[in-house]
Image (tube, rainbow, N blue to C red):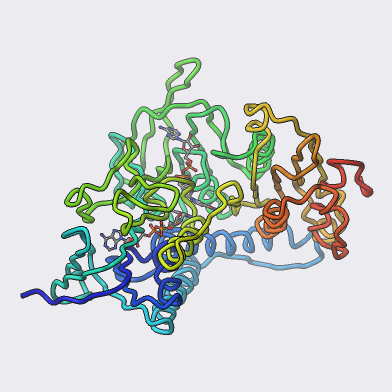
Length: 473
Ligand code: FAD
Ligand code: NAI
C-alpha cells in the first residue's frame, strides 16, 4: 500500500508562484505541502532564469565597464581578463544559496516539502512519484485545496533541434564553457536582448534575428527604438522583419537560414552558437490534468476564472502555466492572492500595474500603458519626457544614456504609464508602480521632494514635464 498524508493545501510546483503560495498558506495557518520535482526549489526563475541571468549580466557589465570605461574615470586597470570558470562559479553560488534559502523558509514556516513529481489521481488526491534524490516511494496526498503552479518551458522552434551545446535554449546559454566568436539569436525579445548583452560584452559578435519589424516584445515603441539604438552602439547586429527558415549544426558551427519578410531575400548566417529565444509555453507534462478534466486553452494554458479557480473551486492555478505575463513577480503576487482567497474568500492582483524590466545596459523598465496602447484605445493623453543627460546624478556617474517618459490622462492628469530607459530603470520603476496604484497625478509625483542628486529626480522631472514644464531641461 502506498504511503498517504493529508494536508489543507497542496501546492504543485516550487517556483516563484508555488513556493510563495505555500509559505503564505502556511502563514495563514494551513497545514501546507509543496511538491517540486526539479531537485531544488525556486523554479525556472531561481534555477535557470531570473537569477543566473542577472548574475551574468551584472558581472559582464562590470567587466565591460572596467575594460572600456575606467580610463575615462581616471582609473587605470591593466590586463583585464575573464576567468570563465570562476565567472560561472559565481553565478552557480548565488543560485545554490537562494534555492537553499527557500528550503530554509519552508522549514521556518512549517511547509512540508515533497521532492517528487505531483500528478492528479482524483479531484482531491495527488500522487507524489519518486525523482532522483527525492522521495523514495510513492505518496498519495489528500488535500482540501490544491494550487497548481507548474510554470512554463522553452517554446521549441519547429525543425531546429536544441542540443544545449551549439544550438541552445535560455538554459544552455547560461552555462556556455567558452565565449562564442559569433552568437546568433532567434528572437529579439527579453531573453534574446539580455543574453545577447552578456555575450556582446564578452566580445561575441551578436546577431539578432527578429520576425517583427521591431525588437523588445511588449515595450513602448519609442523605447524599443531607443533600445535598438543603444544596443547597436554596443555592437549588436539586428535583422528585423526576418524569418528563420531552419538551422543545422555542422560540427562546431551552426548555419542559420533566414529570409526577409518583405523582400523574400534569403541568406545564411554562420555562428558558433545559436540561441533560440522565441518565447515560453505553459508546462503541464506529468501533471495528469486530463485525469480530472482540467480545461486547457488553445495556447496550452490552464483555464481559470478571476479567483484563479479551475472548474473545481478547490483547485486553483497561478503563474506561467495560466494567463498573463510570464514574470516571477506576477506569479508571486498570484501565489499570495490565491492563498488569501482560500483563507478569506478575497485576494487581488492588479494586472494593470505589473512592471516589466529588461536588465540590459541601459536598463529598460515600464509599467502601465504604452503610447501605442493609448492610441489604439482612443484614450486622450499627454506625455512628459526627461533625458538622463540632464540629470546630475547620471552625469556624475558618466552614465547618461536614456530618458524617462510619463504618459498621463489628458484631463485628470493621472499617470497611465511610465517608461524608463536608463541606469537603474528597474529600481526606479517601483516609484511609478506606487504612483499608479494610488491613482497619483503627475503633479502629485512632481510635488514630492526627491533627494538630490539622484536618478529618481528624472522621474519627478518627467512628471513635471507632463503637465507643466521641467526645471532642468
Ligand atoms: P516556474 O518558475 O517555471 O516553476 C514551476 C516549477 O514547477 C518548476 O520548478 C517545475 O520543476 C515544477 N513542476 C512542474 N510540474 C511539476 C509536477 N508535475 N510536479 C512537481 N513539480 C512540478 N521573470 C522575471 O520576473 N524577471 C526576470 O528577470 C526573469 N528572467 C528570466 C530569465 C530567463 C532566462 C527565463 C527563462 C525566465 C525569466 N523570467 C523572469 C521568467 C520567470 O522565470 C517566470 O515567470 C517564473 O519562474 C514563473 O514562475 P512559476 O512559479 O509560475 O513557474
Ligand atoms: P519574448 O516573448 O519576450 O520574445 C520572443 C521574441 O521572439 C519576440 O520578439 C517575437 O516576435 C520573436 N519571435 C517569435 N517567433 C519568431 C520566429 N519564428 N522568428 C524570429 N523571431 C521570432 O520571449 P523570450 O525572450 O523567449 O522570453 C520568454 C519570457 O520569459 C518573456 O516573455 C518573459 O516573460 C520572461 N523573461 C523575463 C525577463 C525579465 O523580466 N527581465 C528576462 C527573460 C525572460
